[in-house]
Image (cartoon, rainbow, N blue to C red; front, side):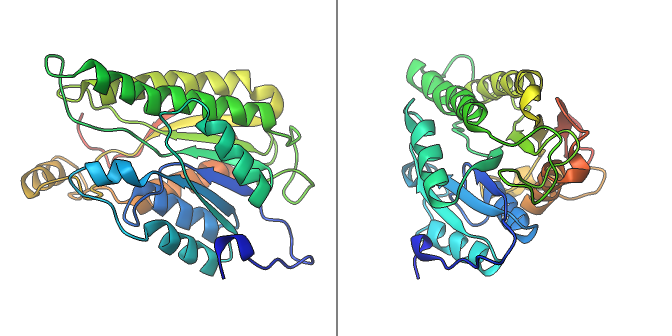
Length: 278
């Protein structure tokens, strides 16, 4: 059975839809968030872009999107895996069109995608700088804008009401963006993520009339295959808990923010880093 041919039970209560970007690898933070939200009762649309992973040192994971989709379906979620190049300004419209056509209106938008290539002030190229801002900043803005233009949940709506999701009190809508505090030696990534923070925090105010909350999460040091042994040990020693973060750590916080219990947390930049020293 393919992703497009999933059965539905007319008698079952409607599950809200979460759109999660950057779910390209099974060990990634995006995949961890998708698993957690699926277990919490969400249907999941997710994006991935294989050429990005292919040019990174960890390489592409063959069949990852299909494998992740199967996991989510086993948890009871309907899924839509959407391959999308976020360097294109028309990508957000196409992503939302496909997600809505296959699953219905999007209630939660989780921005977990990233362009991340290490370089500093002196060796960053104009091409790399522009690509980081196109993916990390412009695409995020356009995705948030598209979400705001399409969101139809009612402020103060309760779970199970038509056209709404799991939010309550302040409204059903949720935006969560993942950020980073990298700066030194990581200029285009850190700068573009800093701009993403401001866009997301602005959404907390500009989309409040829709019943939407918006928050930024800094997941801290999470090894999803990019750390070497020396860096891994050094970061673990600098963390009070003596370990690195996991995708599940981030997923639990995102799950809370998307839940009715998280509706009072709004317009915040939250550090979920185990107390790691900056």
